[in-house]
Length: 206
Length: 253
Image 1: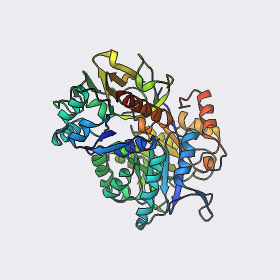
Image 2: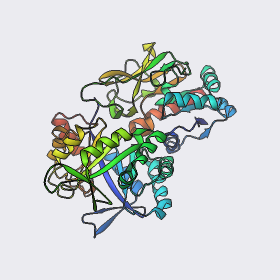
Image 3: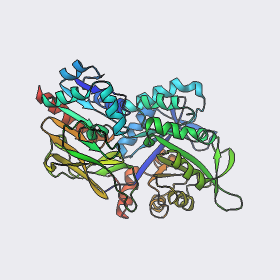
Image 4: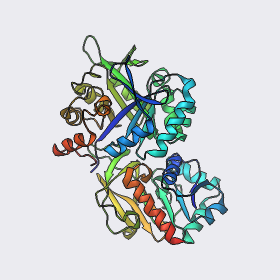
């Protein structure tokens, strides 16, 4: 059973539907005991860093997320769900992130001819092999929508990058904790394959 | 490489996909979810659905097909047509749509752009603009009610205002070029694209491979939309993308 953390994030339905499509049993929940007992946990997210942290706190989910990550449950953060795993974001100065992974989330700098938000399809490079990208050739395209980007402190956890005037850490993996800045649930066949790879990790984790 | 997007547009009436070659003879080409899935496999980067039923008591039917599309297609899609309130936004987004296109409702109530953006994020709010050259040929004005009423508002000015209010994207249809198949309105597209810093989707007039190249190159569009051209398979999406790639335009292939 996959627990999809329900904290009123915008893209939650799309993630749910992608999991349904892949035949993965899932539940939309903010119940700590359900999340703690799930085989895999997904933290989706669209919106602002500060608001999202506030809602996670309000629902008492921060410690729950830290606990599932610590106890080795396969965990996947998507889009804002990636950013929340880190220490802080320039989007909401002074707001502490979950701090499960080390790094900063920064504003995408203005570059000639490139608009912010970074919205659309961009291709991936792999600095090192990541389990989410098994069987997916380098330079495959995925769908991004974001104005802030990750700069992970420990580059060895970065499993995919993309170039948008600046180098964006597009996906990370540290033990059981995975995250994607892009939306696998909106990235057509490539995205479904990435989700399937996560589901495979969940299966092996059993 | 960040890519330019090719977006097929599907007109939906009473839950079924139709595309008027002319608006009198609507052809029923089927189920929105099936159509969408075909376009996903054909390489579409996004989809736009315009509900031309234009009656709000049709909401349940609309939500039903949106739900079906979202359950079967995993590329971003926009829904437009008859959306007037933030609660309409919410209902459609909740079924799995990614973006909402508003046209007349935004003109009549610009605050809707702002409210939608604040509640759901700018990336959800697409302001659709139907523009036509002024009779005196000085610039373009915007029209509401499916191109029936000239609002006498300058198109560039309106696009700028929409951006300021929080629109995440402009879907720009040239009424002069729509249906002609003689190419996108490059002048209009460029005028808008160079006046705002949000992406502009060009629409209306696509008829040949070169039209797509021109609208990206000269028109500075971020995405190109076409309906009947793809619907009747006069051009395949992949064919368009391969052509663009050959000409040095970055696309997802």
